[in-house]
Length: 102
Image (tube, rainbow, N blue to C red; front, top):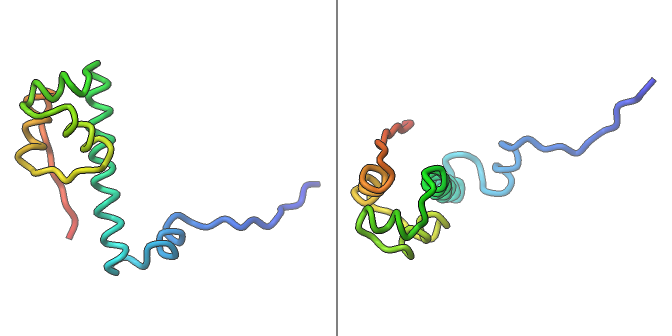
């Protein structure tokens, strides 16, 4: 018969609460905004790779620079909505859909 060992597992929500504060606090809000920007960069990079495009090819298609595409994909740059739409529409041939929570 096996016995269960005690583990020191922490839920993701508890981890975030401890590390970045409770939801609604300034520190948590800042972290969540930065995480959304990070996710956007990952999504754009994954879409580009799926289409077998280089950063330079994407940049040329949407009228920006390779360095700017790299900064977006690596979460080092804020992006204007109009630029995001141009990258998605012209560069990737996609369509942007937005949702938000209140």
